[in-house]
Image 1 (cartoon, one colour):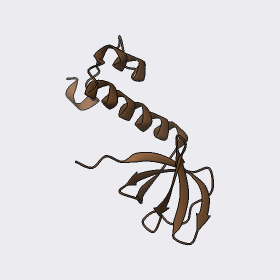
Image 2 (tube, rainbow, N blue to C red):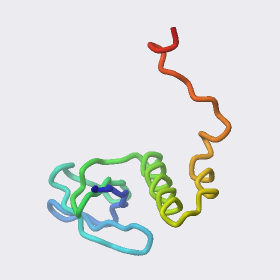
Image 3 (cartoon, rainbow, N blue to C red):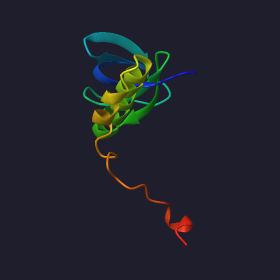
Length: 99
């Protein structure tokens, strides 16, 4: 299974961008997403940017990945902290299914 992760662009060259996640830098192929600017967020799979992300979406993906790490480590109690917007909320059916 491939999992994409958000990286923030810190420098740009032709068809690639130097990106950072935590304290690690990596060059990313940007040919699929086009020109990038420093500060933008990219969703990256195997060193290739697949999508540009808003800062909010990058944060959401990062939290979801952190939750997966918690599950992998058996720390199920910590998961709620990553999805605070869903805790104690009643699920809603899509409008077309509410009838």
